[in-house]
Image (cartoon, rainbow, N blue to C red; front, side, top):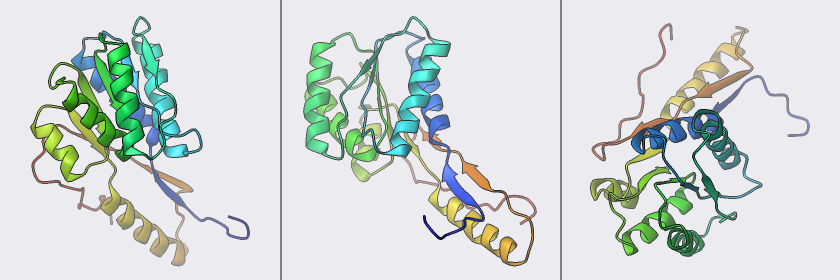
Length: 196
């Protein structure tokens, strides 16, 4: 932002999240593909980083695994649903799917339900809603990934306090995502780091 000097920047490690999604999914398929990547938007840095980390990891660790890239689906759940439906019909041997945003996740789940692919295609989605949690319970998806907003907020306040007291603060703090395979109560990391 023009005229604003950042002291510290706190963000989710989205590229690492994509890497973790690829390793988790390909672990479930024993390195077999093809794998469908449902892309969000070319002008969204967070999802682009997730997608890039996902593709780079598959190419590096599973070079024989084919990656099917969707067109950019945007924020429309309906568009994500229709495109996922079409792609899964065009590629009936698809072994796994990664959906890097909430809207794409929701559309993907609807398509999987319609095609009765519960438990047949391995799926990781990003973010969580009651519908996503229910899809995990129903075996439509294998896991969902979440950021840690409570922890990020804590780090933001703690870092701001340190900066105001003249203490050195990191220029950039990157938090990890969590992969949840259980739809039970959602537990954010509420424990402050040691020394705080």
